[in-house]
Every structure is written in structure tokens, then in C-alpha cells.
Amino acid sequence: MAQNQAKQAYAAGAHPDLPPPVRTTGPVGWIRANLLSSPLNITLTLLSAWLLWSIVPPVLNWALFDAIWSATDRKDCWAQMDEPRAGACWAFIRGSFRLFIYGWYPEPERWRVNVAFVLLLLAIVGVLRDNLPGKKYWLWFAVAFPFIGAWLIVGGFGLTPVGTQKLGGILLTVIIGVTGITFSLPLGIALALGRRSKLPALRAVCVIFIEFIRGVPLITLLFVASTMLTYFLPPGSTFDLLMRVLIMVTLFSAAYIAEVVRGGLQGLSSGQYEAADSLGLTYWKAHRLIILPQALKISIPGIVNTFIGLYKDSVLVLIIGMMDILGLGRARLNDPDWLGLAPELYLFIALFFFLCCFSMARYSLSLEKKLETGHAQ
Amino acid sequence: MNNPDDTQNISVEPAEPIITINGMHKWFGDFHVLKNINLEVRRGERIVICGPSGSGKSTLIRCINRLEEHQQGTITVDGTELTQDLKNIEIIRSEVGMVFQQFNLFPHLTALENVTLAPIWVRKMPRAEAEESAMKYLERVKIPEQALKYPGQLSGGQQQRVAIARSLCMNPRIMLFDEPTSALDPEMIKEVLDVMIELAESGMTMLVVTHEMGFATAVAHRVIFMDEGQIIEERPPREFFENPEHERTKLFLSQILHH
Image (cartoon, each protein chain N blue to C red):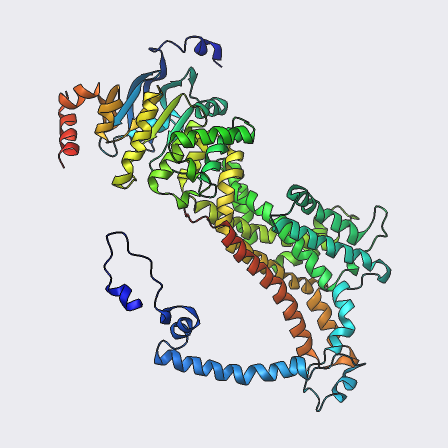
């Protein structure tokens, strides 16, 4: 059949589209192209297979099949295994799980944290999904969420106040991450626009701010937040430590976002500005409708990169005495009942961060795909 | 501010100037791009501007909607003088349509959204009405079936026609064309020129920077030849092509007509 087609002569323009040769597509084609394309490639494939074979089963045995999920302490845990350390002792993590999530948040009030988590998830879904009915209200809710969330967590206005020193663990990590991400994006965009402004004073302020913040390590800024700020405030006034940290983290990541967004703005051709101008759009309308949608689309990888960095950098608050998930975990390692279980702890924390950051990365990829309109102007 | 009634009452008079440029100079830094430009364009008049590259022809029409700022002299468009006053600039821009060499469509919006954007956001037209009007213009440029495609999915000629529809949808009184066919493949030039000829026949005031001499002969009332920032010659097309006055014009014409 195929040979008949090959011999057949077609009139000009009438040649049908033929399927490609089988060996170049599908799973066979993929294996040939990616695993077996050259002697070196074949060697590397075999080597990788051997490495996977020798690493994956033992790790799975340790982490899952030989792991102990309930025990009273380390001795009990190891007693349940064929030999000590043969498997992971997840009972340790299970026992501290609530502490890791809520920190020292008072037991009777923990429902507030749960509600805040659920609302956070709803807000995220509301922002990220765009085929929701009543999208506008979802967005308003997402804008209001940081304030609702803050009210639920710290209390006041009818709820029992909870001091911010009681916050810890995943709760604290998520608070820092979400606040930083939510507020640094608009601030960063404003700084990027300011840096490109035609007004010299505004431009100077933005440049100085960005360069100063970028030029100082985050840890230094956190020390400034925890110690020096009190010198600048009027005596006797208290300014919550968590609040100071949140402000510093937000400013820090805003400076990076600003530079990423500026890169996106410079990626647009001047023709886009001219077309917007020539239609009579004002500066703000042109930016909102034409410039920013395109600049932000170009900047997505950089923005998400900054967000992931910010999220992971939140563990640095450990240094100024705040107990995020890493700080609490390390404190738990000193519990005499559970000594020596560092691998379990760090694996758990690594998994937590990986899940958060990997979801952000995947979302950014899907967003890029969705916004692709087949044209780079 | 000028009283808008002044201009509206006499708008039927065909000889009335709609653009007046008086003793206009422009510099890019130290470079003197436009030198003492004096030009009067009457309502409904169609002017083709040509000249060697770097002669300032694009800059001249870009000054008319203030994409470039002039430093001396006056430009008055439809009774409004172009000054630093942002309000005036916005008024003039919404009355003057512009078509660019590189089309400059908004790549993140569909063809239809490109056309409806300014009517909705500048003219405050309700969306349904804007879409109806946009479809009318997309039909006029003969691509209503491409309305929901993105610019990246259209050919150059189609993109340029969408760009023309985008300008027309603002109901401009004047249309500026900055080398509208220079970035097009040869087989697409005609479809864009056809649209421009149709537009000319409808009585639109047009200033066209182009080297399409066939177009100039067919529709222009006047051809302006520029060199080194000055208007060298300014004549009806037949006289311009058959009997140019200046040596520089003759040289230019011999170069673009014989290759």
C-alpha cells in the first residue's frame, strides 16, 4: 500500500499528507532518540539504570516498607524493626505533627487556623482558575483574604487575641510566604514602572530603593527588623516583630520582582507603546490593558522564581528567634525521647517545601502555556 | 481651549484646512531632523509623502499625533493646537488614526479585541455596540472571518488590515500611514493597498508615507518629496512624476522607478 502511494504521481498541490515513518515517532521513536542514539548514550542509559536500581529500592524500603508509623519513643520505634535504623521512624513526625503545623497556637482556637487555611485555598483557586462563575467576586475575595486571614489568626474584633509569638511551624512559614507573595507583586510592579518613569524624582527614589534592598542580604535586613527598628520608633511604642519581618521580606522580594518586571517591560517593542498612544489611551489604561499583560507574561518565569526563593528564604527567620517549620523541627530533635531522628525530620521538611515550590513551578508552566498566543511581538 | 462648535459649523467646506503646520522644527538631540516645515492639509485631501530613508518623512507624520514632540513652530489639528497639554494630545490622538509599518497589533488580544479596545476604553462605548461596529470595520477590510484569531495566527497582510480596522473603529477624521506596506511580502501588498484605496474613495483625509508610486498616482491629490528634513517639492502626482522640478527629486525618482 505504502509502496503504491510512493510510486503514484500526484497533480501539483494534490499530494496528501502522509504519516511519518513509524521508527521516528511514538514510544519506539522516543527511546531510539533519547536513550539509544549513540554508543555514549547507550552507556549512559545503562549506567543510569544501574544507579536507579541500586538507589531506589533501598530508599523505598527505608522510607515506606520498613518504616514504623506509631511508637511511643525512639527505643520503641527501633525495637519494632529487624535492626535499629532499618526503616524510618515516622512516629516521631506523627507525634509532633500538630506542633509542626500550628506552633504554639492555643488548642481551643486552632479552628481559626483551619478556617484560614481553607479560605486561603479558596482564594488561591479563585485567583488561579479563570472559568469560575462569578470570577469578579472570587477576585474581590482574594484581595480581602489577607485581611480576613490576619484577623482570624491574630484575633481581636470579637475573637480572642493570640500573640504573634505563639505562631510557629508551617503556619508561620505559610504566613510569611503568602504575605510576601501577595504584597511584593504589586509593590514590585509599581517600583518597575517608577524606575521607568519620566519623572526624575520618582525614578531616583525607585532606583535607590531597589539597589539598596538588592545590595543587602536578607538576613541583615531581618536583623535590622528585629533590633534596629526599635531605636527609630518612639520610646515605649511596640511594633510587632512578625509585622516587621513581614515588611522586610515583602520589601526584599519586591525589589527583585521590580527588576524582573522591568526586564519584561523592556522586552516589549516600542511599537506597542506607540500603538496604545496613537489610539488615545492614557498612561494608566495603556499599562493596564496593553503593556502590563504582555510584560508580566514575559516575566512569569522570573516572578515565580523570585516567589519560590522568597518562600524558601522564610526559614531565615530562624536566626532572629522565630520558629518556623525548620526551627521547630530542630528544636524537636533535642527531645531526649526522639534523639537521632534527623533524617526523618529533614526529609519531612524537604518534602513540605518541595510540594509547595513544585506546585508553584508547575502552575507557572501551565500559565505560560495558557497565555501563549503564538506571537512574540 | 478652542470652541469645538467653530470647527463643526464649517466642516462641510471642502477647502478648509484640517492640519496646519507652521515653521516647525524638530531635533533628535543635536540632530536637526525636521527643518522649517510648512504644510497645510485640507479636509478630505490625500497626501503621499516620499523621500530617501532618513529624510524625516516618518518623523513628520509622527509629529502630527505627538508620537514625536516638535520643538519649534506650531501644529494645529482640527482646530486644536498640539502643546504640552495632555488633554489636547488625547483629543487629537483619538481623532487621528495611525497605521504602522510593523502593524503593532496587540499580540495578547484577538483581532476583534484589538479593534474594540479603544472604542470601549477611550470612547466609553458599550461592549456589544463596540463589537458590532468592529465587525463592520473588519468586514470593510475583508477579514471578518479572522475576528477571533490572535495576530500571531494571521499573515502580515491580514495583520495590517486588522490594524487599519482598529484605527477606523475610532472614527478618525484623519488617517496617518507610516510605510504601511514596507514590511509585507509582495503578494500581500495589494490586499492592503486595495483597502487603502477604498478608504481614499470614501473621502478620508489621509497622509501616507510610502514608496508605492502606483498608489500615489491613483489616489493622491499631492505628492510631497522630502530630503534632509526639508520639504523639497510638493505637487500633484502626475506633474510630480512626469516633470519633477528639482534635481534631487529627479535622482530619487530615477532610483526608485528603475530597478
